[in-house]
Image (cartoon, rainbow over all chains, first blue to last red):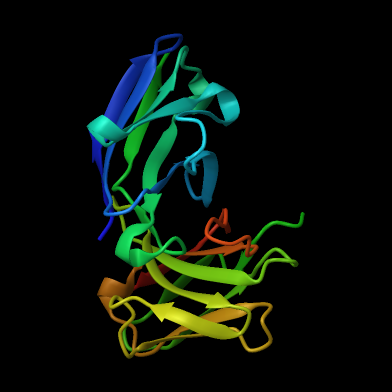
Length: 115
Length: 115
């Protein structure tokens, strides 16, 4: 079964600093990988997705992620944090025995941005 | 606004009562998904529909849970004899069938509190 592991349930960065949120995946077939953002009391919004095309994926709000098969990683980065980036971020995977319809989420990483 | 909508946004009920949630997907989307998100966790897949057919159910969906999508448009999720462990955010998502990959658009969720 596919799964994702998010390293660090809480990450704090200073405004203007690099954001790095880590995600490692496990899948028996080429996966589709996603990063979602969730603001308090809201649903999830897709930031970016990897679906076997370019390994460096650019998303909304200046975020990007790189698919590294050798490291089974899909880390999320942003060069300069903004206060509005404070939210919870979920890495997710589909594929494997669950099929591409079923999306499996990580436990999430709460990003705090310090002024 | 043509996004996914969910009703109600919040529901407080007493243990043992039945509750029903509604999800209205994006109008042209033929797939609809239900997820449950408990505090400190990522969303967990419950079930999904293609048009009116329920194609997959998670083991998390006990006999007390039932989901329907009678005309292939809106969907309802009913929980009978609620338990305190049912307290969670229930998220609905929808997508349009484009083969293996279908971007899921999420609604704002219904937060259930069972007293």
